[in-house]
Image (cartoon, rainbow, N blue to C red; front, side, top):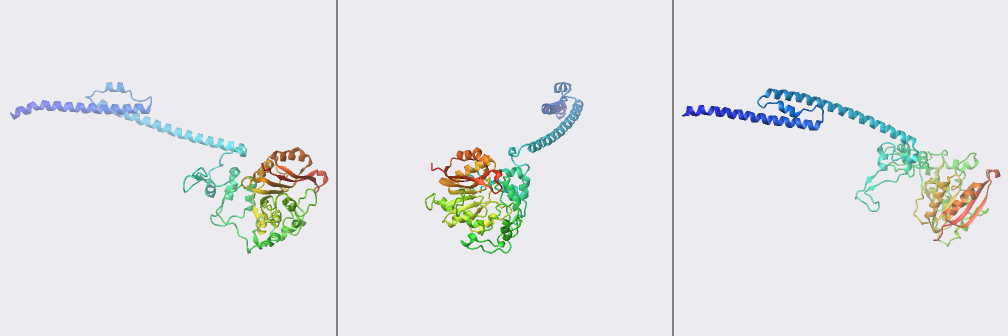
Length: 444
């Protein structure tokens, strides 16, 4: 019984084996066809396998042709991958060449463009300059007063076209002593890089510094030489500065440091129609209503000293250090210096100052457009009823009526006093004139 079962079971077992082999071959063929189809779809290569003809040539019961086809397909796939890699290398080379061309074009465009058309910095920022420029995230997040969550430090726009110079200015030892570069820094300011970025270093201290002369004696006392650092200046002491008045040559405010000379009598008397006295000007307004003001280009601060003597009148004096320590000298007198150029927007809010004074500085050496902007800025900071004292404005005779009178009329000041006179220090043939005026900002 058992032998009969064995003989009958063998053919059935063989049939099952054949069926299993065929099923496995079908699965293998389906897997191969699926892979080939994926290669064909994603490679897009013209050398892709012709699946229908390939499938028609495969007999499910013959594995040898299938292996040959698989080897052939593997070879073609390898070649395709090599071609793709070569294309990637060519693309990378093309991108590199394109970037080089665009960089060179941008550089050429910046070099051929006027400074005002440059956008951004010329090259990537680093070090202290990058920190000084910002922006910096606010620790408490968005601030509605700034309308941002970032804080940008103040920096003159023109600094961007002077990046190499600003980077030099910002090169120092953090926490150490600042370089003695006052002259360099001031030239940056005069080129429009104003305000300069802040620095994290200590200015060089004066040697043997002593306490200043007490007020009010300080108003007319020459400070000790040990009160300042003399590195930036030709003179190395105040005696040298005072003696400049007796030397040949041109200096900015040649006799300003001699407090016992012409400075001692400035604005005390009216020697001519263009010389106004402080007392005359103060009488134009009710007593005590001229309290705070600005002297533009005030030299060594004598106008502010005179005003301080006449009562509680605080005058801020703007000045530059042109081969002389003007700002330090003003501070030694117990007055307030302000180191800004004549082109700088006045750092005062609208309608706040009682008086603005300027002697010599606002004159025809300033381009007309810059001058008009400055005059409108003076109008802005004066309160209604405030006084603009234009003191010894000088120009060529032909400019006075053709250029400057119409300019002052455009500003909108009310004329309280207006006097013109010849400027004769360089000879009558020069046809140079002085203009002095007291101008009031209208109340409405």
